[in-house]
Length: 353
Image 1 (cartoon, helix red, strand yellow):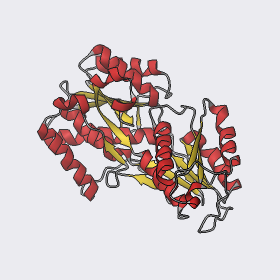
Image 2 (image 1 turned 120 degrees about the horizontal axis):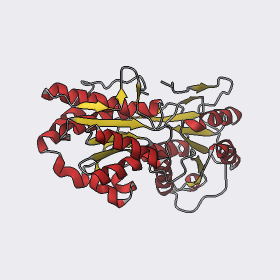
Image 3 (image 1 turned 60 degrees about the horizontal axis):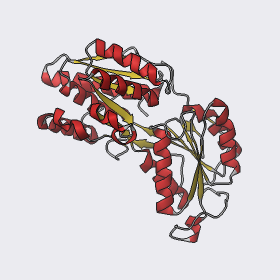
Image 4 (image 1 turned 45 degrees about the vertical axis):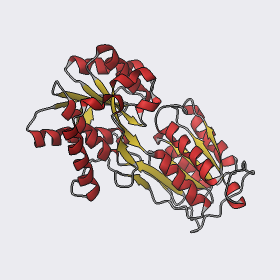
């Protein structure tokens, strides 16, 4: 398994209260003049802005922060690897106080610019960069995907479920670890033998498409799982997951669990018929909190870790497929949620943030 890269620098010392550089006046809408002077720049990874994943949700969070704090925000969209470093440089050159970067592809550029600009506040989503002025935003998605795995096992008619990823990376495999553990707990509670294809938690290896953009790869892989009897499938592969939804819709009798955002809202409407739930990362909430910290001069590099307890992760409503989830199963899932929140049940993964 590839290990999450943790990048550090030690030379730059940042004052306890960041001396943030000013930028151009923002649009009207803040509660006071000080708030209206703050601006933020976000750099997407190569998936682009409307990726139905954390680029999109991070931007939605900054838009919410515009409303709440009267800041001015702008997204710099990367369409390929060659855009990444120049876009971070452009974000820094804007003079804005807060620079948000999204995903592991931007880790090195974020570190480099943070070292060169110790008076600016940086935040990186879904990746860890250790620096005095960089706040990682990460999510313990294993907690929510544990619930999704328990759900999948509970609604499966064939006794076979599956998951696959876009790449063998900790933010991906964290979902997969929680999912197979949730299936295992359902089997333990009910004395069943539901099988989870696509991931071996012990060896940390399984099924991957090799990218997060080729929808056809997701469709082909999902068709293979359906051929093996899987009737609930969790793709952890960004846009590639749409291929899984397409295969489920064509074949019939199979449902999909989306990730990051609520697929009911972000996927094309025809896929609502096969969407059981989604494992959510509340990136929007994190962005609003971070902007608030910058506005109030209380920004720190302490990581934001989304959990079930703080609402940073969750599973979405069952929407059109709620009839597939008996009330008794819904009650069991709520009980498991409360046990995780209380600490009675600890969901473990090598990739836990």
